[in-house]
Length: 231
Image (cartoon, rainbow, N blue to C red; front, side, top):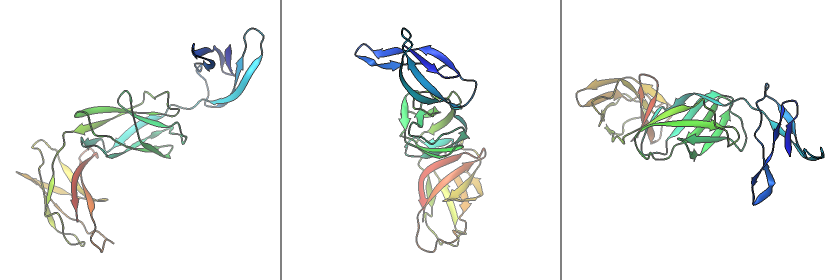
């Protein structure tokens, strides 16, 4: 039995296993074009067509940038995969490391968002994408899991009009230059011996007590999540 990928090539079909002789396995040949073709399952002996369907050749998905590129090892962080050739279909998968599939959502052909689990250990982990749940593109990205860092804000609340001087405590000595991000608003910081200081921006239309996430935006644009919140 052979699989005929019309206009592309013919490959031999094999039973998946002895216990599943009616389920065949074919390896698609390389295609010179990105296209949908007719797929025929043909008996080599009597040249009889057993079945027909369609098969789509897709461009490999590619990850160009992951943001944030550095997250807390506690997990549950949302990352954005910015790239190309992402497709909206049920088989879309995002993989962390060599085997672990993680929840993901298609946004556009250039953006997929995913949720990270807690880290097994600190360090860089590879992130890859598959359009069909089987073939993962070699054009991957990496996320750095950091040791859990306890960062606190003093004070942790203030008026919505902004201007409050907030100390960021708990930073390690080797933490590089950064800006402060309150919710979606970014302001400059200044470092001192035991931490750093930011001035809270005007929170705009927030006129009732609200909690906003606090993040550190590093010099390369990567975002470091913290457990701290500001009210």
